[in-house]
Length: 255
Image 1: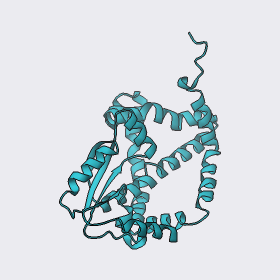
Image 2: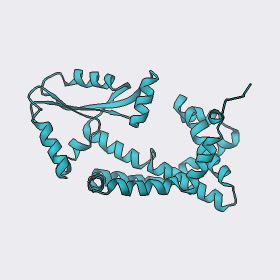
Image 3: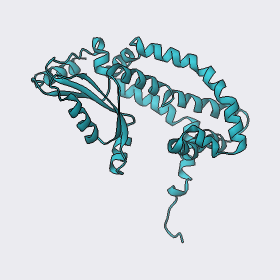
């Protein structure tokens, strides 16, 4: 990774005493044996980690809402690191800030990304969609019952007041089914989440990210993997269903 090491050397000469080194993720410091990032002792080192994508952060900032972020102080050389990290958290558009440390931030973040936030949710989507299709349901019905209802109707209710409130505002069949089945899914997936967390804590996930991202053909390989998702029947059905949403219909000529 000579280009990345060179960037680090270029940055280090500007880290004179009293300056601050800011991170948006605990990765570089926590796994410094893999990244080689060792900051000077006479600078402040802290992080503000928005809990969402950059796209969401910018969109919510423009809406005047803000996205929640975690913050952590790794090194307080000046005695002003707390003031600096809070100011930076506000500046990047955080809705509110909660305290953590570098290790906990990256352990929870890598687990969440691979788990319920991205990896697990895609796996669950794919499994349920496949079962419905194999049992004779159409692509549109399978997608609506797997993804569309969740993202468009139920998750907004969870975001508003929590899972219990979402349950309380659903049909009685949905309530009963959810209450009867959620522990089965918890028990089935808990071993996978424990395996995942152990892999994160052991540095296996960070090393895999470094190794794969450092390859010259990483972007090409990434596009191939994203293409597999994009062109799958599940997400092609999703593209069609999204196009049929009322807000995506032409307004010309409407009364």
